[in-house]
Image (spheres, rainbow, N blue to C red):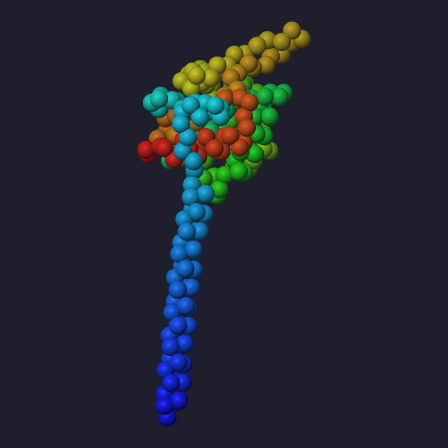
Length: 228
């Protein structure tokens, strides 16, 4: 009987030790999971960089976002567009025209590459827009076909020359009609991409030449520091 009692006590001690080990392993697994989850979450968060670092990476943030005067423009679907339509999303605006031989297609292609690097939630709250400064040739239907060649989500906007000039001036983007020697004309225009925040204010701009990776870094940082 004494041997049986000793055996039972030993078995009980071993069982308790096993339970203790299992509990310890379970707690350690939970701790490891929590640490890994926190690490992965941190990796997914945008890195906040200084204004100096923004400039080094090709982005310039205004010290104070600039309010844009309301202007009536024309969307590529034929409906009216005014600056109030910028509200609720971040919008990257590029001024160009469909007959542009090099800068415009290169820029739109780069913007497409940048857009694809964004996660789905960020893309859903980001618009890419081409504002045509050649309204006499870029009718809404043609403009819509042109921008959607680069990405189905891109949009086009045009309008009369006076309103376009007023809009571009507010965003510090110059453009001028230039007559060619052989006849016809082209448009000289700024190559920067303007960033409008969800309040519809001029917030920042990206300098040419654009780099998708640098744009993603600076764009995510700018969004993260926005007090909307």
